[in-house]
Amino acid sequence: MSISHSRSMGSLFVKATACSIFTTALLTSGGALAERASVAENPTIDASLTAYEPLNKLEGKLTITGSDTMAMLTDQLAFEFTRMYGYPAVTVFVEHPGSNFAMREFLVGFSKQRRGDKARSEGHESAAYADILASSRAMTPEERGHFKSRYGYDVMEIPIALDGVGIYVHAANPIPQLTLQQVDAIFSSSRKQGLPSDIKNWGEAGVEGWSSQDIHLYGRDSKSGTREFFIQTALGGGALKSELHEQPGSAMEILSIARDPQAIGYAGIGYQGSFVKVVPIAAEAESQAVLPTADTVTNNQYPLSRKLYLYVNHEPGKKFENPVLREFLRYVNSRQGQEIVSKAQFYPVTKTQLAQNLVLIQDKSATAALLEPTK
Image (cartoon, rainbow, N blue to C red; front, side, top):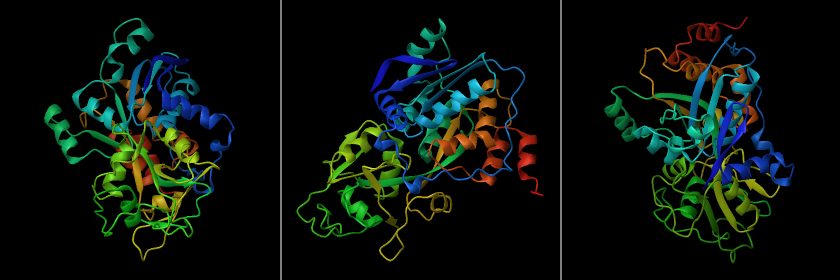
Protein backbone atom coordinates (compact mmCIF):
# COMPACT_ATOMS: atom_id res chain seq x y z
CA MET A 1 0.00 0.00 0.00
CA SER A 2 1.59 3.28 -1.09
CA ILE A 3 2.13 6.09 1.37
CA SER A 4 1.26 9.61 0.32
CA HIS A 5 4.65 11.29 0.36
CA SER A 6 7.99 10.92 -1.38
CA ARG A 7 11.28 10.78 0.50
CA SER A 8 13.96 12.93 -1.09
CA MET A 9 17.58 11.85 -1.40
CA GLY A 10 19.15 14.77 -3.24
CA SER A 11 17.95 14.40 -6.80
CA LEU A 12 16.33 11.03 -6.21
CA PHE A 13 12.65 10.81 -5.25
CA VAL A 14 11.39 7.42 -4.17
CA LYS A 15 7.67 6.89 -3.92
CA ALA A 16 7.83 4.39 -1.09
CA THR A 17 5.46 1.60 -0.23
CA ALA A 18 4.86 0.15 3.20
CA CYS A 19 6.74 -2.93 2.08
CA SER A 20 9.71 -1.03 0.65
CA ILE A 21 10.10 0.99 3.85
CA PHE A 22 10.04 -2.25 5.82
CA THR A 23 12.58 -3.79 3.42
CA THR A 24 14.94 -0.84 3.87
CA ALA A 25 14.71 -1.09 7.64
CA LEU A 26 15.11 -4.86 7.50
CA LEU A 27 18.26 -4.77 5.42
CA THR A 28 19.90 -1.87 7.27
CA SER A 29 18.95 -2.51 10.89
CA GLY A 30 21.60 -5.13 11.58
CA GLY A 31 18.94 -7.50 12.89
CA ALA A 32 18.90 -11.23 12.43
CA LEU A 33 16.81 -11.09 9.27
CA ALA A 34 19.39 -8.84 7.63
CA GLU A 35 22.02 -11.58 7.72
CA ARG A 36 22.81 -13.09 4.33
CA ALA A 37 22.84 -16.85 3.90
CA SER A 38 25.65 -18.49 1.98
CA VAL A 39 23.48 -19.28 -1.05
CA ALA A 40 23.15 -15.55 -1.78
CA GLU A 41 26.87 -14.85 -2.02
CA ASN A 42 28.14 -11.75 -3.81
CA PRO A 43 29.73 -12.99 -7.05
CA THR A 44 32.92 -11.39 -8.30
CA ILE A 45 32.32 -8.86 -11.06
CA ASP A 46 34.36 -9.38 -14.23
CA ALA A 47 37.06 -6.71 -14.25
CA SER A 48 36.99 -6.63 -18.05
CA LEU A 49 33.46 -5.22 -18.14
CA THR A 50 33.24 -1.72 -19.60
CA ALA A 51 33.46 1.05 -16.99
CA TYR A 52 30.90 3.83 -17.06
CA GLU A 53 32.35 7.18 -18.11
CA PRO A 54 30.02 10.03 -17.10
CA LEU A 55 29.25 12.99 -19.32
CA ASN A 56 30.53 16.43 -18.41
CA LYS A 57 26.97 17.71 -18.21
CA LEU A 58 23.57 16.06 -18.04
CA GLU A 59 20.18 17.39 -17.04
CA GLY A 60 16.62 16.17 -17.13
CA LYS A 61 14.27 13.70 -15.47
CA LEU A 62 13.72 9.98 -15.39
CA THR A 63 10.84 7.92 -14.01
CA ILE A 64 11.22 4.24 -13.06
CA THR A 65 8.26 2.13 -11.99
CA GLY A 66 7.70 -1.54 -11.36
CA SER A 67 8.95 -4.49 -9.36
CA ASP A 68 8.84 -4.73 -5.58
CA THR A 69 11.47 -7.48 -5.79
CA MET A 70 13.76 -5.05 -7.61
CA ALA A 71 13.04 -2.12 -5.27
CA MET A 72 16.42 -2.10 -3.51
CA LEU A 73 18.17 -2.54 -6.87
CA THR A 74 16.40 0.29 -8.70
CA ASP A 75 16.70 2.61 -5.67
CA GLN A 76 20.43 1.99 -5.40
CA LEU A 77 21.04 2.32 -9.14
CA ALA A 78 19.17 5.62 -9.23
CA PHE A 79 20.95 6.95 -6.15
CA GLU A 80 24.43 6.03 -7.34
CA PHE A 81 23.75 7.38 -10.84
CA THR A 82 22.62 10.80 -9.62
CA ARG A 83 24.90 11.27 -6.61
CA MET A 84 28.16 9.58 -7.54
CA TYR A 85 28.59 10.98 -11.03
CA GLY A 86 28.01 14.67 -10.44
CA TYR A 87 24.60 15.03 -12.08
CA PRO A 88 22.97 17.67 -9.84
CA ALA A 89 20.56 18.68 -12.61
CA VAL A 90 19.19 15.15 -13.00
CA THR A 91 16.11 14.03 -11.09
CA VAL A 92 15.13 10.37 -10.92
CA PHE A 93 11.73 9.27 -9.61
CA VAL A 94 11.39 5.66 -8.48
CA GLU A 95 8.27 3.73 -7.47
CA HIS A 96 7.73 -0.01 -6.99
CA PRO A 97 4.04 -0.96 -6.91
CA GLY A 98 4.71 -4.47 -8.29
CA SER A 99 5.56 -5.76 -11.77
CA ASN A 100 2.07 -6.84 -12.78
CA PHE A 101 0.45 -3.58 -11.69
CA ALA A 102 3.15 -1.44 -13.29
CA MET A 103 3.10 -3.56 -16.46
CA ARG A 104 -0.55 -2.70 -17.07
CA GLU A 105 0.14 1.00 -16.60
CA PHE A 106 3.25 0.88 -18.79
CA LEU A 107 1.27 -0.70 -21.62
CA VAL A 108 -1.41 2.00 -21.53
CA GLY A 109 1.11 4.81 -21.09
CA PHE A 110 1.15 6.23 -17.59
CA SER A 111 2.53 5.63 -14.10
CA LYS A 112 1.13 5.94 -10.59
CA GLN A 113 2.92 9.28 -10.17
CA ARG A 114 0.84 10.95 -12.87
CA ARG A 115 -1.42 12.91 -10.53
CA GLY A 116 0.78 14.41 -7.90
CA ASP A 117 4.15 13.30 -6.69
CA LYS A 118 6.20 14.62 -9.60
CA ALA A 119 4.16 17.79 -9.78
CA ARG A 120 4.57 18.41 -6.04
CA SER A 121 8.27 17.61 -6.14
CA GLU A 122 9.07 20.08 -8.91
CA GLY A 123 6.22 22.54 -8.63
CA HIS A 124 4.81 21.88 -12.09
CA GLU A 125 3.26 19.09 -14.10
CA SER A 126 5.59 16.39 -15.40
CA ALA A 127 5.34 13.76 -18.09
CA ALA A 128 2.89 11.07 -17.06
CA TYR A 129 4.64 8.22 -18.78
CA ALA A 130 7.19 6.06 -16.97
CA ASP A 131 10.49 5.99 -18.87
CA ILE A 132 11.48 2.56 -17.51
CA LEU A 133 9.48 -0.43 -16.34
CA ALA A 134 11.42 -2.67 -13.94
CA SER A 135 9.94 -6.15 -14.08
CA SER A 136 10.69 -9.40 -12.24
CA ARG A 137 9.17 -11.38 -15.10
CA ALA A 138 9.33 -11.28 -18.87
CA MET A 139 6.53 -9.71 -20.88
CA THR A 140 4.08 -12.26 -22.22
CA PRO A 141 3.52 -12.60 -25.99
CA GLU A 142 0.11 -10.98 -25.50
CA GLU A 143 1.65 -7.99 -23.72
CA ARG A 144 4.30 -7.61 -26.41
CA GLY A 145 1.59 -7.74 -29.06
CA HIS A 146 -0.44 -5.10 -27.24
CA PHE A 147 2.61 -2.82 -27.06
CA LYS A 148 3.45 -3.25 -30.74
CA SER A 149 -0.12 -2.66 -31.88
CA ARG A 150 -0.21 0.54 -29.83
CA TYR A 151 3.18 1.98 -30.81
CA GLY A 152 4.11 0.24 -34.08
CA TYR A 153 7.40 -1.25 -32.89
CA ASP A 154 8.67 -3.82 -30.41
CA VAL A 155 9.30 -2.92 -26.79
CA MET A 156 12.96 -2.62 -25.81
CA GLU A 157 13.78 -5.45 -23.38
CA ILE A 158 16.99 -5.21 -21.35
CA PRO A 159 17.84 -8.02 -18.89
CA ILE A 160 20.01 -6.44 -16.17
CA ALA A 161 20.25 -9.10 -13.45
CA LEU A 162 19.72 -12.77 -12.68
CA ASP A 163 17.71 -14.10 -9.75
CA GLY A 164 16.38 -17.34 -8.35
CA VAL A 165 12.97 -17.56 -6.73
CA GLY A 166 13.67 -19.35 -3.47
CA ILE A 167 11.29 -21.65 -1.61
CA TYR A 168 11.45 -20.42 1.98
CA VAL A 169 10.54 -22.22 5.20
CA HIS A 170 11.07 -21.47 8.89
CA ALA A 171 14.66 -22.10 10.01
CA ALA A 172 13.46 -24.84 12.40
CA ASN A 173 11.88 -26.86 9.60
CA PRO A 174 14.10 -29.91 8.85
CA ILE A 175 12.81 -30.42 5.29
CA PRO A 176 15.91 -31.56 3.31
CA GLN A 177 14.69 -30.82 -0.21
CA LEU A 178 11.64 -30.67 -2.48
CA THR A 179 10.94 -31.53 -6.09
CA LEU A 180 9.18 -29.11 -8.38
CA GLN A 181 6.25 -31.56 -8.45
CA GLN A 182 6.04 -31.40 -4.65
CA VAL A 183 6.13 -27.61 -4.69
CA ASP A 184 3.24 -27.69 -7.16
CA ALA A 185 1.23 -30.12 -5.01
CA ILE A 186 1.84 -27.94 -1.95
CA PHE A 187 0.84 -24.60 -3.52
CA SER A 188 -1.57 -25.48 -6.35
CA SER A 189 -5.05 -26.96 -6.43
CA SER A 190 -4.51 -27.91 -10.12
CA ARG A 191 -1.35 -30.06 -9.68
CA LYS A 192 -0.32 -29.63 -13.32
CA GLN A 193 3.18 -30.92 -12.59
CA GLY A 194 1.77 -34.43 -12.20
CA LEU A 195 1.43 -35.56 -8.58
CA PRO A 196 -1.91 -37.34 -8.03
CA SER A 197 -2.84 -35.72 -4.72
CA ASP A 198 -2.36 -32.57 -2.68
CA ILE A 199 0.39 -32.23 -0.10
CA LYS A 200 -1.30 -30.69 2.93
CA ASN A 201 0.99 -31.47 5.87
CA TRP A 202 4.73 -31.60 6.39
CA GLY A 203 4.72 -35.37 6.86
CA GLU A 204 3.39 -35.76 3.29
CA ALA A 205 6.22 -33.47 2.15
CA GLY A 206 8.82 -35.80 3.65
CA VAL A 207 9.45 -34.38 7.13
CA GLU A 208 9.58 -37.21 9.63
CA GLY A 209 7.50 -36.68 12.76
CA TRP A 210 5.64 -33.70 11.27
CA SER A 211 2.55 -35.52 9.95
CA SER A 212 0.33 -33.57 12.34
CA GLN A 213 1.76 -30.23 11.22
CA ASP A 214 -0.36 -28.61 8.50
CA ILE A 215 1.46 -26.59 5.86
CA HIS A 216 0.77 -22.84 6.02
CA LEU A 217 1.08 -21.17 2.62
CA TYR A 218 2.40 -17.66 2.02
CA GLY A 219 2.88 -15.76 -1.23
CA ARG A 220 2.59 -12.47 -3.06
CA ASP A 221 -0.54 -10.60 -4.12
CA SER A 222 -1.80 -10.18 -7.68
CA LYS A 223 0.30 -7.04 -8.31
CA SER A 224 3.46 -9.14 -8.18
CA GLY A 225 5.50 -10.34 -11.13
CA THR A 226 7.17 -12.91 -8.86
CA ARG A 227 3.74 -14.43 -8.23
CA GLU A 228 3.10 -14.68 -11.99
CA PHE A 229 6.54 -16.22 -12.59
CA PHE A 230 5.96 -18.74 -9.79
CA ILE A 231 2.55 -19.71 -11.16
CA GLN A 232 3.84 -20.25 -14.68
CA THR A 233 7.16 -21.92 -13.81
CA ALA A 234 6.56 -23.86 -10.60
CA LEU A 235 2.84 -24.58 -11.00
CA GLY A 236 2.75 -25.03 -14.77
CA GLY A 237 0.14 -22.28 -15.05
CA GLY A 238 -2.10 -23.89 -12.43
CA ALA A 239 -4.22 -22.18 -9.79
CA LEU A 240 -2.91 -21.23 -6.37
CA LYS A 241 -4.74 -22.74 -3.41
CA SER A 242 -7.31 -20.41 -1.86
CA GLU A 243 -5.84 -20.77 1.62
CA LEU A 244 -2.60 -19.03 0.62
CA HIS A 245 -1.92 -15.92 2.73
CA GLU A 246 -1.22 -13.11 0.26
CA GLN A 247 1.39 -10.53 1.26
CA PRO A 248 1.91 -7.06 -0.29
CA GLY A 249 5.67 -7.49 -0.62
CA SER A 250 8.49 -10.00 -0.38
CA ALA A 251 9.86 -8.64 2.90
CA MET A 252 6.48 -8.92 4.60
CA GLU A 253 6.14 -12.46 3.31
CA ILE A 254 9.54 -13.47 4.70
CA LEU A 255 8.71 -11.90 8.05
CA SER A 256 5.49 -13.94 8.18
CA ILE A 257 7.43 -17.14 7.44
CA ALA A 258 9.98 -16.26 10.14
CA ARG A 259 7.12 -16.09 12.65
CA ASP A 260 5.42 -19.35 11.61
CA PRO A 261 7.26 -22.70 12.04
CA GLN A 262 4.78 -24.42 9.69
CA ALA A 263 5.12 -21.83 6.92
CA ILE A 264 6.34 -22.09 3.34
CA GLY A 265 6.54 -19.34 0.74
CA TYR A 266 8.41 -18.09 -2.33
CA ALA A 267 10.45 -14.92 -2.95
CA GLY A 268 13.57 -13.63 -4.65
CA ILE A 269 16.84 -14.99 -3.31
CA GLY A 270 17.85 -11.71 -1.63
CA TYR A 271 15.47 -12.11 1.31
CA GLN A 272 17.34 -14.45 3.64
CA GLY A 273 18.22 -14.52 7.32
CA SER A 274 18.69 -16.64 10.39
CA PHE A 275 14.99 -17.23 11.03
CA VAL A 276 14.24 -18.60 7.55
CA LYS A 277 16.01 -20.94 5.14
CA VAL A 278 15.88 -21.76 1.44
CA VAL A 279 15.01 -25.33 0.45
CA PRO A 280 17.04 -27.09 -2.30
CA ILE A 281 14.80 -27.85 -5.32
CA ALA A 282 15.02 -30.69 -7.84
CA ALA A 283 13.49 -30.28 -11.29
CA GLU A 284 12.34 -33.93 -11.19
CA ALA A 285 12.26 -36.74 -8.64
CA GLU A 286 15.40 -38.31 -10.12
CA SER A 287 17.28 -34.99 -10.40
CA GLN A 288 19.74 -33.53 -7.94
CA ALA A 289 18.24 -30.88 -5.66
CA VAL A 290 20.17 -27.60 -5.79
CA LEU A 291 20.12 -24.26 -4.05
CA PRO A 292 19.98 -21.00 -6.01
CA THR A 293 23.58 -19.77 -6.29
CA ALA A 294 25.45 -17.63 -8.80
CA ASP A 295 26.51 -20.77 -10.68
CA THR A 296 23.20 -22.68 -10.60
CA VAL A 297 21.21 -19.58 -11.58
CA THR A 298 23.58 -18.47 -14.35
CA ASN A 299 23.61 -21.93 -15.95
CA ASN A 300 19.86 -22.48 -15.33
CA GLN A 301 20.51 -25.59 -13.25
CA TYR A 302 18.25 -24.15 -10.53
CA PRO A 303 14.65 -24.81 -11.70
CA LEU A 304 13.30 -21.40 -10.64
CA SER A 305 16.02 -19.23 -12.21
CA ARG A 306 14.91 -16.03 -13.90
CA LYS A 307 16.08 -12.77 -15.41
CA LEU A 308 15.14 -9.33 -14.11
CA TYR A 309 14.30 -6.78 -16.78
CA LEU A 310 14.12 -3.14 -17.69
CA TYR A 311 11.55 -2.34 -20.40
CA VAL A 312 11.73 0.89 -22.39
CA ASN A 313 9.39 2.47 -24.92
CA HIS A 314 11.96 3.37 -27.55
CA GLU A 315 11.83 2.79 -31.28
CA PRO A 316 14.83 0.72 -32.41
CA GLY A 317 17.48 2.65 -34.33
CA LYS A 318 16.11 6.08 -33.37
CA LYS A 319 17.93 8.64 -31.23
CA PHE A 320 16.89 8.70 -27.58
CA GLU A 321 14.71 11.75 -26.97
CA ASN A 322 15.59 11.69 -23.26
CA PRO A 323 19.39 11.78 -22.81
CA VAL A 324 19.03 10.89 -19.12
CA LEU A 325 17.33 7.64 -20.10
CA ARG A 326 20.18 6.61 -22.40
CA GLU A 327 22.86 7.53 -19.86
CA PHE A 328 21.11 5.62 -17.11
CA LEU A 329 20.90 2.52 -19.33
CA ARG A 330 24.60 2.89 -20.16
CA TYR A 331 25.36 3.03 -16.44
CA VAL A 332 23.24 -0.01 -15.57
CA ASN A 333 25.05 -2.04 -18.24
CA SER A 334 28.52 -1.01 -17.09
CA ARG A 335 30.88 -2.61 -14.59
CA GLN A 336 29.71 -0.15 -11.92
CA GLY A 337 26.06 -0.94 -12.63
CA GLN A 338 26.64 -4.68 -12.35
CA GLU A 339 28.47 -4.11 -9.05
CA ILE A 340 25.25 -2.54 -7.74
CA VAL A 341 23.35 -5.61 -8.99
CA SER A 342 25.63 -7.79 -6.86
CA LYS A 343 25.40 -5.52 -3.81
CA ALA A 344 21.60 -5.62 -4.08
CA GLN A 345 21.80 -9.42 -3.61
CA PHE A 346 21.17 -10.43 -7.22
CA TYR A 347 23.52 -11.99 -9.75
CA PRO A 348 25.07 -10.10 -12.71
CA VAL A 349 24.14 -10.97 -16.27
CA THR A 350 26.71 -12.47 -18.60
CA LYS A 351 29.20 -10.47 -20.62
CA THR A 352 27.43 -11.55 -23.80
CA GLN A 353 24.12 -10.27 -22.46
CA LEU A 354 25.66 -6.90 -21.59
CA ALA A 355 27.04 -6.62 -25.13
CA GLN A 356 23.57 -7.30 -26.55
CA ASN A 357 22.10 -4.69 -24.23
CA LEU A 358 24.64 -2.08 -25.29
CA VAL A 359 23.83 -2.71 -28.94
CA LEU A 360 20.19 -1.93 -28.17
CA ILE A 361 21.06 1.38 -26.52
CA GLN A 362 23.44 2.28 -29.35
CA ASP A 363 26.64 2.45 -27.32
CA LYS A 364 29.00 1.28 -30.06
CA SER A 365 32.27 2.11 -28.27
CA ALA A 366 31.27 0.28 -25.09
CA THR A 367 30.06 -2.69 -27.11
CA ALA A 368 33.33 -2.89 -29.02
CA ALA A 369 35.36 -2.64 -25.81
CA LEU A 370 33.29 -5.35 -24.16
CA LEU A 371 33.71 -7.75 -27.09
CA GLU A 372 37.43 -7.12 -27.44
CA PRO A 373 39.38 -10.27 -26.56
CA THR A 374 40.94 -10.15 -23.07
CA LYS A 375 44.70 -9.91 -23.28
